Amino acid sequence: MIEIIKNRKLIKIISSSFLLILGLFISSHKGYGDDIDSRALISTFINMIENGVYAPSRYYGHPFAELVLGFMGYFFGSFVSSFFSYIFFILSLILIYFSFSKKKINISLFALFLLLCISNPVLFLDNTNPSDAPLALFLFSAGIFLLNKKINILSAVFFGLCIASRANYALFVYFTLFFYLFKNDLNNYNFLNKERLFYILIFSTLIGGLFYFPIFIQSFLSLDFIRNAGGPELTLATLLPRFVYKIYLSIGFFSAPLFFLLLCFVKKNLLFKTLNDKTNQFFLGLIILNLLLFFLIPTKTSIISLSIVLIYLLFIKIVKNKNFIYLVIFFNLLFYIFSYQIFEIKYNSKKPCDPIQAIGANYKPKFLEGYFITRSKKLSEKIVCDSKFFGDRKDKYQNGKKLK
Image (cartoon, rainbow, N blue to C red; front, top):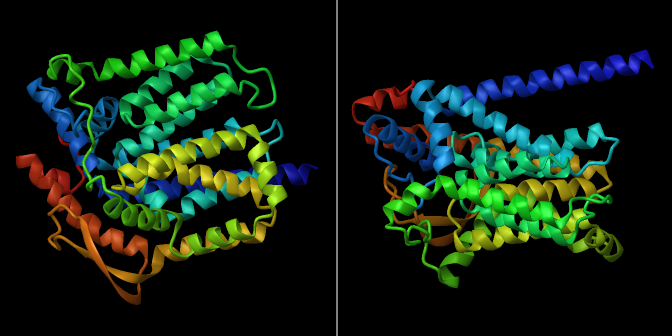
């Protein structure tokens, strides 16, 4: 018995050390990240603190993320910003898993869930950028965790801050609260009464809306600031190819076929059992809502981070054969260093600083370098391009230094 306890403690120490070292490495590698959001968030914060002017980072703004990530970049530099984004991502995974676990936690399944998420290069690299994506995911996960623990006021605060970090998360917050309203025994116990859920919904809306009040005033008390956040034209011919390709990319070029085979051969009784579980219904509802949103805005893969995480959580719950899970983890890791293409995608411009938009594709199968390698090459180019927006702070941005 003592040996088992010692082994568990050793595993925890090794796991924690691995996660810490991984976080330190990726934070040193990332700089200010390859997401345009990182640059935009920091620019908005600098404009607020130095000029007293609020100019939203993108369209309607992401005010809480602008404050948090902008503050970190301005006063501490890219390493701290990237490390906190990494921490936000890891905490999101922990909170989501423990929010819906039974009293007795299966540590081996939890470890597999973490490995699945970390091993996916698209999911991992998207959510270790110093951007609003990992922050919003963390705040949403924390809100659900606190909701399940019946800590009502704090859950409303986190949901409100989540909406203030990334407005599209309002859909997920409202879906969550309405789902719990009608399925209040989600975890097989008497949950929250309708009155409390209604108060949480109101407080979340008020807290989130408070952060958007400045842009509301700038819009002369109209809702004109709420609009499509960029991207391709809203036509099926334009949206569908991007949607399918980026879903395929996000699941993984090697793992996606495995998931497709699993769906084809899943037993009907297992499928019905899965759909009858209210927790699974909640996950599926969020996934469908997230994918519908992504279909309309198939721009950045970070938009569907929540869906990928929940798909992995369902995958862990449904698949009983762990060898299949190990195989997905292996293929995910393989995608870091090795890849392939079936179609060669044509873009409107090959210049690194120009906006990139796919305009066509030719059938041209070949092997490629892995996702981590190709993204790392683009990372330095992106940082150089973004640094031009910082004037005499250009070198500081390129070198990941604090911008104060």
